[in-house]
Image 1 (cartoon, rainbow, N blue to C red):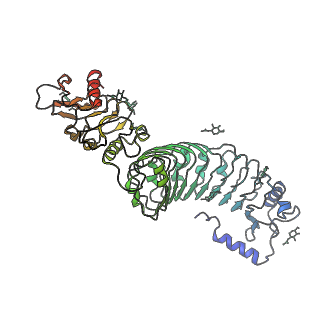
Image 2 (image 1 turned 90 degrees about the vertical axis):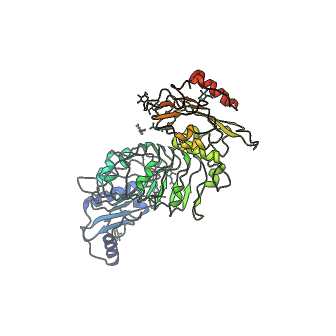
Image 3 (image 1 turned 120 degrees about the horizontal axis):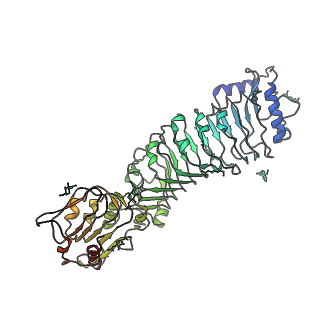
Length: 508
Ligand SMILES: *[C@@H]1O[C@H](CO)[C@@H](O)[C@H](O)[C@H]1NC(C)=O
Ligand SMILES: *[C@@H]1O[C@H](CO)[C@@H](O)[C@H](O)[C@H]1NC(C)=O
Ligand SMILES: *[C@@H]1O[C@H](CO)[C@@H](O)[C@H](O)[C@H]1NC(C)=O
Ligand SMILES: *[C@@H]1O[C@H](CO)[C@@H](O)[C@H](O)[C@H]1NC(C)=O
Ligand SMILES: *[C@@H]1O[C@H](CO)[C@@H](O)[C@H](O)[C@H]1NC(C)=O
Ligand SMILES: *[C@@H]1O[C@H](CO)[C@@H](O)[C@H](O)[C@H]1NC(C)=O
Ligand SMILES: *[C@@H]1O[C@H](CO)[C@@H](O)[C@H](O)[C@H]1NC(C)=O
Ligand SMILES: *[C@@H]1O[C@H](CO)[C@@H](O)[C@H](O)[C@H]1NC(C)=O
């Protein structure tokens, strides 16, 4: 798909020209004049036999192709890797129409230096400037080439920093934009936020630049097959990947600062083959729907803050899951199988909070009692099983948003749930109030709504200060709930005793 530069007509012209020695007209003086300056400035005079006194279209100029039926104008210059002596590019004379019939210009791998001149080349389809040492691009560079299909400027580390500005939007025919390692800074808002301007855009590589900010929400494309944004400073969510679902085959987002969870449903990415998100700050469980991305061949996720089970993928898919597991992603090292039941329940709780980073950095591996933030453990009801049970969850004032997941209720030994002072919305699941072990529930100072039915006098419920208007309604007890009637008769763990007293005294 990358090599779509040369239209068949051009190939025929080239063949015709080399096969038959047609008596050709004199080359346009504007073309001649520019080519002689180019020959002198790049050393092509010496290296490629571009003689000062000769016609660039007389057949002896290596890499130059002319159109004999079209006024003998130069249509192609391909000197990739042939000018290793370096040199610079002369300014183009727009008035004179120099090279105005040029379709293809390949100056790649030549170690050229100096600024790239403004190229007013109305018919140019392919421009390859990669592998040089250019010092800068002119202002509004892309306005001069309205037909451009293929552009590459990768590996030009000496370019003065430049941004993806609105002059790009004039490239309405663009198919390939390859600008990795080209010193681009700024954001993607203009370029990828206006993909409607590029209906045929198929490949974008912006790896190894200095791009920052988020990937625009308006990024929607049904044409992009390859997108490489790796090794930049991009941040925010990767939810945008679903906006590329119908066309994307190769998606590289590694080595950035992307954060938050994966989109829950990845199964719409049905053409995706290469998927790399390693070295970011992604949190949470890799969605099982990844297994329904049939064409996957390579998945890379290491060095994130992933949790939960290793995704189950067919053996044909190469991954770095083993490396990721060793580095602490996933609950288990031995690749397959679900996590411990308490781990699974707590990860469901974290999922409803959108897998916040503050939990993801701490809730790793498979033992919640091994120092997980806000998790308190005890012997449970003393079954003597040896392993500690989760008896308290204190996630007060951690800046968490989202909802309270009913999975709390599957933590069978849980006595205290403290979630005060966050930004939680929705209602308190009824199943939580029915947990036989529960003694303290503090959901005060959130944005919860609805009503909590207090049916047991041995459960202390704090629900004040909820912006959603959460109410506590006592049933089977007369009057409203009063914390002074709470009795700590069945308290079994030091944390519960502490939590109950703390909560009762200080109100959070
Ligand atoms: C092209 O011009 C150069 C210089 O005038 C000459 O040496 C060469 O023979 C010419 N080539 C052809 C194919 O006519
Ligand atoms: C490229 O050019 C620079 C200076 O013009 C020179 O230092 C460098 O060695 C050249 N590199 C190659 C690969 O020719
Ligand atoms: C972009 O350029 C790099 C380096 O020159 C090359 O490896 C890659 O294949 C190119 N990608 C496309 C889509 O042309
Ligand atoms: C990009 O680099 C240029 C030149 O160093 C600088 O003037 C500009 O502020 C930078 N833009 C951003 C968004 O960092
Ligand atoms: C929820 O919290 C996360 C950080 O954990 C933040 O990125 C996100 O914007 C918050 N969402 C809302 C709706 O406030
Ligand atoms: C709740 O969210 C709002 C807006 O997203 C934020 O300004 C506020 O600081 C958050 N409150 C807490 C307690 O995290
Ligand atoms: C909470 O209770 C008050 C007083 O009983 C009532 O006016 C209000 O509508 C209730 N709010 C909700 C959300 O149920
Ligand atoms: C719960 O966590 C908050 C915030 O870390 C802390 O201030 C509070 O003392 C804790 N409460 C209990 C009962 O441990």
